[in-house]
Length: 456
Image 1 (spheres, rainbow, N blue to C red):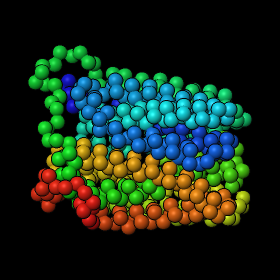
Image 2: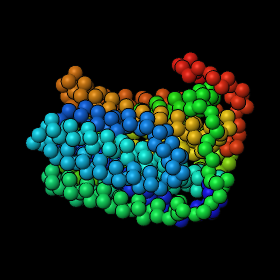
Image 3: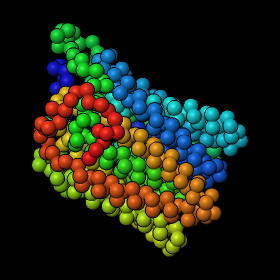
Image 4: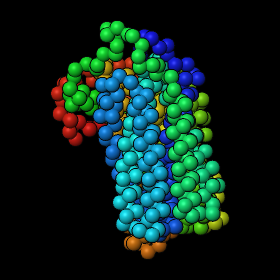
């Protein structure tokens, strides 16, 4: 943190949270609404939007390089604004591509690949450097609640956009889809510009060279990653994140098509249903943040219990959706979807709180690598889950000959994954904020990064 700039107060944290709100607003249009239009209105295989979203998540492997670019330049704001500009452009291009698929399928798919490429790069650049800016401008006492606030504000962007866009999209037409997506992108870019204006400070203060931020220690990245992987707590938490986010991501791209194909909902109605889910996530996050005292010392074991409870509840909610299609219209679908969101939110915010407790546990000066490893696990799992979920629906439909049974089987599998994640969470070592892992400090710096290191 620059000596010339005081730490951010709560108002500054809320301002930066608006960037996540804007990011979430664009992302929900591309991962939920465009997905539903491709599958239901255009009757395309669910694998297509699944592959496109997986493509955008695969690009999240570039996050370390995108963060390194801002390290070299010394400023995060240009990368945040540039990333949001690329993301907004990608959102509009993806909507245009979806509309084009109704008349020129091959050309539309090719344009969609470009659109989701821009979305992936934009999310990586803006999201990574926003977290770096928060870490540099927020003091230690406020980092955990700041992370919670920013995450909740992103979910708020999902929920508000899904609800408003759902109203604006009815009656559906390709031109209306492009217009609504373009409006969301323009508003998101404007909000981002206002949110980051002046937060980082001006580029030209005459600071002495000695006061400028020094580069990170000269440990090679490969060695640092091997050191972190050798830490049992970090490794187990990485595996837990991967499994739980695989289950979380697998539901994301099939919920709206499920509502349209099985319950006959219109695009606007299913988009509003997605808003109900994200509203439940928001409620779950706020509840756990208050109940578990996220960001306060001595709460690690409480957070782990909430992680386990959230995973079990998410699994039960998904099993409920598997039954919902079999029961039919008499099933309280909106209530089930809200409960799913509530359980997902509880698990997610408890996991974030645990990240705050574990990120400093282990070898010193590896916090960035540790968080980056967890972020990579999240991105790979979420992207893979979305793609595999849509593939599983297509395969189950072809095998069973029934869309209803296909969705039921896939939701049941996702529920079981959450139960596995609960078991993994129970095995994560409990370390309170400020604890260090002395046993991991002695790990061989050049330990081999391979599957043998994944032993529990």
